Amino acid sequence: MNLVPCGATQTAGGEEVASMTEAVRGAARAWRPRVWPLLAVCALIFAPLRAEADCLLVADAADGRVLLETGTCDERVTPASTFKLALAAIAFDAGVLKGAHDPMMTYREGEIAWGGDKWRGDIDPEAWLERSVVWYSQRLVRALTPERVSRTLRALGYGNADLSGDPDAGRGPEWSWIASSLKISASEQMAFLRELDAGTLDLDPAAMSQALALLPAYDGGEGWRVKAKTGGAFRLRPDGGVDRSRGWGWFVGRAEKGAERLLFVRQVIETNGARGSPGRRVRDDVLARWPVIAREALAAR
Image (cartoon, rainbow, N blue to C red; front, top):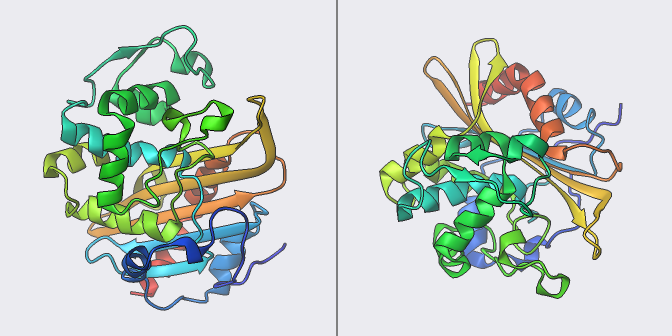
């Protein structure tokens, strides 16, 4: 097994930390106390995915304090479908989304259907997040306007808030979160998630609660209930095909067991050319190991 030491300094594509503004640096650092060099966790977390770079952050939901941090967490990369959580909060705040089943939208021929039949037919907000339907996200961005979404993301401290996309490749704002212009680090994801969970973002409190309620639920083992969003993306070639030489995977959310509540962000960069979604691989890995991760995090409290 190839172990990646906790706190390892690695760089693998994306924007360098130096590109972050001082304000973002400060916000990210605010939730990051000392790194916990737990070799057992490293062995369990890093080895199975054979990723070029990894990050795991686990925080106490009660006060936002990071209890566990391993890997490289300050490198900005594509958020992929984890962006849907931020988009849902913004859309609820604006009144574009009204509830878990409102509005219902119907697939139109020619829209993205990477998910096959699961992405066709009628899709409501709950199904949008559960099935990670791209065309529903694209319609929301159009309804809100890219300018408004970008402006709100900037106010919320969500990564670089860049929804410009890749105009030269014919992919504009509606593609910006899929291996394109919008980028966020794992540390910034945690800062955003912490404020969303605490209800302290500059959004309507009900909108934040409604967005979190849409997160798909999973069994985390040993009595843990996990609610989280996957994110997975590969580079897109100029011809529209997929370049599998580098893939980004995320799993972002919260876990509850009795009175215990933890927030977590897991992000990987894969370079093994594997097929399938990096996000699903990260999700399955985290869920399989969650009891161990949770014990290590709680022991550090």
